[in-house]
Image 1 (tube, rainbow, N blue to C red):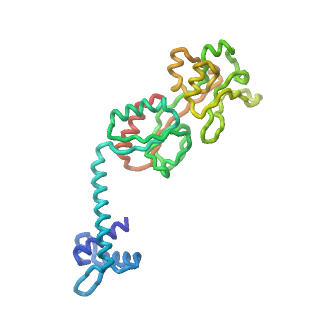
Image 2 (image 1 turned 90 degrees about the vertical axis):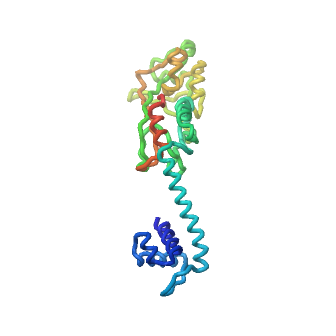
Image 3 (image 1 turned 60 degrees about the horizontal axis):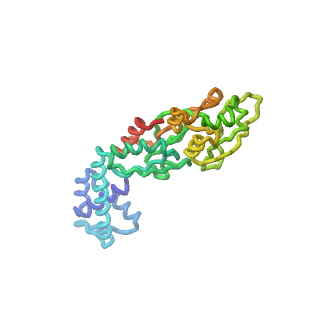
Length: 294
């Protein structure tokens, strides 16, 4: 901003040919104008004005610089006008990061696009932990605890996770009564794409029991294929309720070991902390808060 003020002052002096008149129009003293121009010349290592007791004229270098500075001020003015025009109307590109949960996210995204057709959604589906500010995201949707002080956050909701299998699979393989019995079952497991590690099934065990070693009958770096395989009777999967809600209601899947499992995942909307959020971001946050069916 200091450089921009200096440029504005330089253009005013060039057009009025007077430090005193430039200062009057800008609301500062002539000495302030003179010192600002002197600092600019020192920084640029070039003389911008020929000075005499009677007149001030541009040097050759000053003439070239004046043309550039007028373009800069014109662009700033145009940008301010554009932002003022956008202040009351949600429009423009909105870059959003979200987990690899298309079945959950797309109905809400689709409804948002229908309601705000002038907002252009640029969606990045990934499970890695992105740097919202450094990578230029307008907002991201994430799960778990959030501790980045640079970001503002809004809680979107929470979702339980359950162990599920098809009735046909359980009829064939038997219903496990205790967590330890899962070691003898076909287990469909989620693998985190960023680390390659398998997601732990948070089952409560006795203090004396060793950690469960579950078979990896099938692994996938997204969870939708695990739900499909479970419905087809291929094994037991640990999945969020929102993904299997319809299959549970229709009887395609049933839950098991509910008394040994207690896990709630919280979804958050995160965006760079700012006193003034753009209209497109404000309406996106409000819409997703109201319509994301977790």
